[in-house]
Image 1 (tube, rainbow, N blue to C red):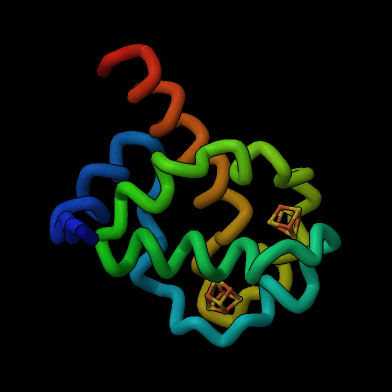
Image 2: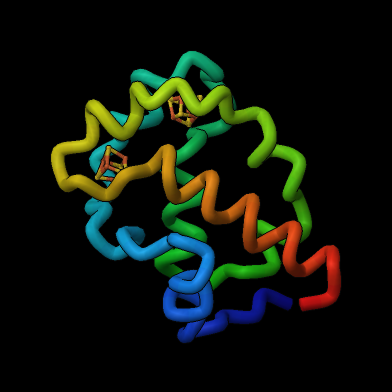
Length: 100
Ligand code: SF4
Ligand code: SF4
């Protein structure tokens, strides 16, 4: 069963993920991302917007694929900072692993 967490966006603020709602899902970030991996990072940002926390926690390894090259952030027309969002999600996942 898919559980939706409406406050997930706010939960991420303390990890530096504050621009997810700016994303309008244009896909530029995915098009330029050198990983060419499963609609990354747009798909992950969409998970944040929809409150699909479990989708991220079930597959955290993909966050560590990111090279932090910054190309997605440079290309984003909405200043959603997708590369920074991925880094913030890493901080969130690490905090969860540590039981915080
Ligand atoms: S920063 Fe990460 S998500 Fe963004 S384009 Fe580079 S590898 Fe892809
Ligand atoms: S480029 Fe920006 S607005 Fe477009 S999908 Fe990626 S994060 Fe969202």
